[in-house]
Length: 176
Ligand SMILES: [Cu+2]
Image (cartoon, rainbow, N blue to C red):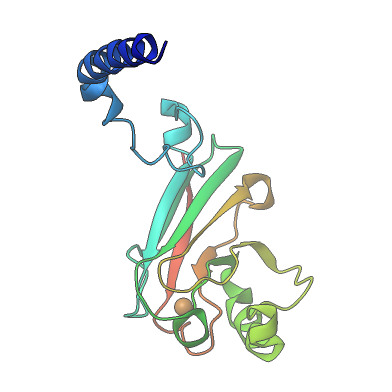
């Protein structure tokens, strides 16, 4: 009986060795990071025009000075990535959109609201959209309702972390 079992397990080992060998090339492959959860599955070409990624770092700068939103986009997705290593408390960034004339007030009230509120005044109606405040290595995504933009106004995006406004500010353009 023992011998019989041993034979069977030997056979099973051989089998599994074979199948492992043939399966190996595929088995070792699939550890690609499951197409980052945030990315909308299979981005269509239409969606591509209605989204952008903006990077900011420990150098207190965005990597873009303008965001061009097609008027055909009902919703526009913005992902802010903090490429630096400094913590949120020292070099936090957010991305806030407001009318140009409201920028200073939003930033000032944000600073007053303090770190515990991520430098955003609660219920600030001047804000069209804002990400949360993030630190190095983090990212945040927002969907902007483009219906909130009206013709004749100028819009900007900026960071409300105290002291960052002068360096971190760009224009939001609605384009055809
Ligand atoms: Cu900032």
